[in-house]
Length: 430
Length: 175
Image (cartoon, rainbow over all chains, first blue to last red; front, side, top):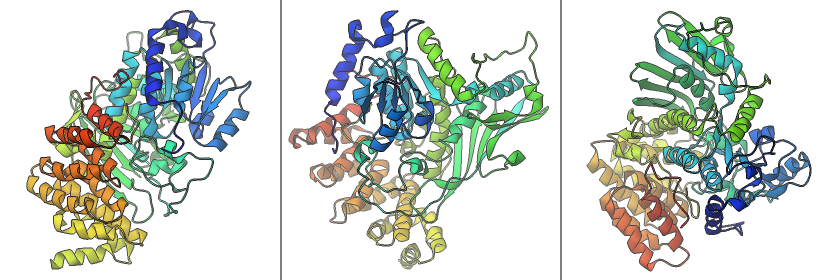
């Protein structure tokens, strides 16, 4: 393996196990109580992945930075005060005692593994959406958070948006009546050219960028941003922004701990070019008890000339909730609604910022101190991304599938179940 | 056979819309198209490669649908021919990737033989890891006994992964 780290997987795990067993080498903030920084302790944060959202999250008091692109790493380091630890292999960062928590903003195919390893190393985690790439990765993330008692927040910050909260309270208090259908729309996935398979630029460790993923040669159209348009890496908008809008839907419908019983997806891939996700896509999920239907359409209806959002259809009224990430809006009737004293009061995230991203990070930091459950905890994040994962599988197979939300498996389709886990390149494993 | 020839000509068309229509309806063409499509995957024309890959994927998923065991076996047998051939490594690796989805117990021996082929052994390992049942596990175990030292950890990784369950994944201790 090119750029093979000096820290072996074995030594890393041994170090992780030792960290869990011997309090004297726990991270910096735990003097108040093992695994829990005291109220006045500084939380040492390490940043893994410093492109797009990683750059957005980065704060000047970072204690460690990790990035496989040396140029990005150097640029990020300029924004940090003091002398942060710098590395390109996240295992070195996880091995540090001054790192209490990590913000993971790497490409999607790394989210599951890095979250599991961070939990094993005793770090709390903020992991960007989409939560993971496979069902097995999601299960591993949930198990690791529970087993190692870690706070894991998924970066679907719509849950911390005041307008999404207003829509959620409006719907959960029955203002639309009985909801039979929710229609999500989104602009098409991108198309592109062919690029050229070539040697990676000297600043990029391509082998480490790929990590556990199936090997493909470097092509400038794969990396950095465009990994989203490949099934093996990003899975298209349905797993990307879909994670935001579907998160709001599941929240409003109070369906965080269950899932659909069937999925049917169709789509049309690009006729030319290197990208392999469908350009247009139609998905239908059916839910039971209560019975309702969720649909995803690219491009879809584009209500109010907005690129993406959801329309809720009740037997008394309808409601549009646009966006679902840091930019989220809804209709005045929901924003002006106040539930009665005996109505459903959905907890609203504390914090003074108007910016949903800032509120979401603040919620995570508060939960690290209090050990309370974050607003977008990993178990919810996993259930949300499950919708997108099984939709992509249905699209690839070209057939409708029955899903068992309790067993978290497909019923009656062996091939579909072979998609639940992804064999990794060595030496990477969950 | 005429139908197959016509299908393959469309996959090689200079018109992207003709290639696309052929690739998107490839599923029922089935096993006879597998080897010719593998040859087209080595084409210098990227549009033809994309169409051939898409068609092969469609054939695999169509054959692996519930209740089509014989079709799946026919497609697996053809994929094994490609995987064990002297075609470019990229094409052989692709065939092994799809065997992981459509292959059944009858395909295990053929895949296991490729665990000894340095060019595609890791793709063979991952295909066997993905396949359910005892035969793939036994094949990985047997390969472990004779594998070169640099490949043993990969085989151990796959054997270990096959024991993971939804309740245990993410929690195992260090080896």
